[in-house]
Length: 588
Image (cartoon, rainbow, N blue to C red; front, side, top):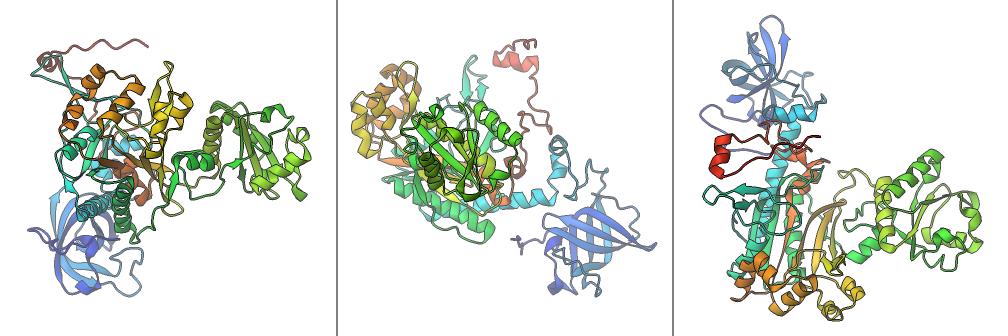
């Protein structure tokens, strides 16, 4: 899709370069931009490709000897059709050119640190050090246009559903949200600190107490955690909360927003987003953010080996995946897969190649009965030439290992295979028991238990606690977690019960969450919310594997900013003003 700008005219230009066409033939136009390339045409004429954010246009210029790459020009001339046979079908403006040109040099330029043709591989640090040059590349221009369309579509969808955009503060008290805070020292209160928000979670819940009813914000959030392809220190998310709603209402609101965003970029509205429970996702895919673009689902084999004599399969859970055509893998590659599985925490990995007539070639085949081998083939539906991989262990370990192997062996690039959104619902309320026997919350401690499982909280049985579901839900896309949300606890009796189970005393609750709990005493409506990462959504819609490619000024994976050299030391006078001292760096 291409932006059109009917109001492109300014004091210096009449049109954008990339929007001129045959319909403009005969018009006198002024275009502004950077010299993308210059090709000599005899001794007096040159073809100058002028570039702006919309694309290129060829200008026929006299005496262009003084024009260099990335010079900033204003060119005034007449649009005309190119001579027959000289058209460039690869260029949006390839049917026309601008002739009879007058050229004004608005700014000279040194040679750029790297070509801006999109065809030359450039080290990322160099690109980020000169990001202002890198942004001129068509790839980055395209990605930022996609981002702008996504933001606009999200805002439109949320406003159409009655949501009000509210800004929340950036300087807040430190709150326990799972990751480390970025902190800001207070000059007026030496020794005390603000925190930058990991999310607007508590403030949006206060908006519900305040009667806002439906809140949203495209919010900047900051977390001091390790960076990777889908994570930056600072990120943007759609943050939403609504009162007097159910889980289904929130899923509908957010589905509308992401569908509008996808349609704004692709031109097609995604189908209704399917739902799957957390337990089904783990059993079938070994992941709570499953990529459903490909098969290779986990297959249950526990019953097949219920009476096995093979010690390795005498385990609480036995599951398998089938890799179509995988029998061609060499023994070295199979051994490498086994080592990888062990590195992930597996006790071992059993592989079986399916040969003619359903025979299984495997180092362990001789230890399995004919019925067990037949059961494996029946459960996996494996054909000749396929590879079966089996893990036996505790169920959660089996899920994790086979889920990782499934992605390792079968997952296509995140940008291929279309858009496969998926809602994952009914997450566990608690993820495990701590060393002190207290349950560890899978989400924040304000997540409402599933209505059918509230009684499990009262039994005191650890198994019951771990079986308790929450009203929490995640949205995934092509195997990436876009975001998560939940129905919130607004009833004081349930909140006290959850705090008690977590071992949070009244004093600790007051210290950590006092202003929220106090607000709830003044009438908290039932409410629920959600937040999803805009960087991740835009990356997939733009066809990128790394969110740094859809952020104008990102950090490197080490957290550095080559453009500004941040982070940098603070001078001593500033430290004195803040009442701070910096410890000497530890020796290696």
